Length: 136
Image 1 (cartoon, helix red, strand yellow):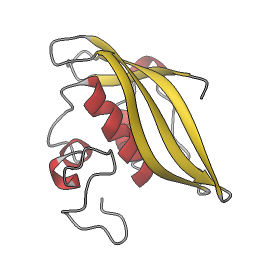
Image 2: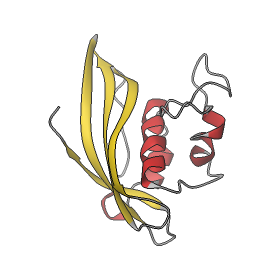
Image 3: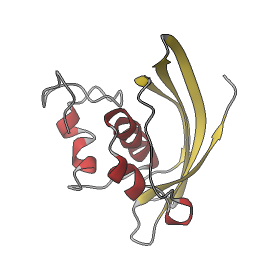
């Protein structure tokens, strides 16, 4: 699950400054589950960067999970910024994370800003329910 020119000690793309193998990799390979909604948000962002559709589908709430995910080959994800969070801690059953994701498309640098909603599934694992796009 490493990208080209990436080593196990490369900083995780989620912005945590931890090495990928100590940050999002354990979630992506199924060794552990995110303990907070923010951890899930960060790991899902990295999964989009790495085009890990099985992980994205697995962490999508069953009631509105798409059949599949198609990645746009013209989008290059650059940076994730977490703006705020509400609930979503270890003891909570729901949570919201507001973030922006910077990306490049057709040589333009653009930004997506969203407030994502997460709940715990029947196994008490965090899952993505939906997101509300916010104005930049």
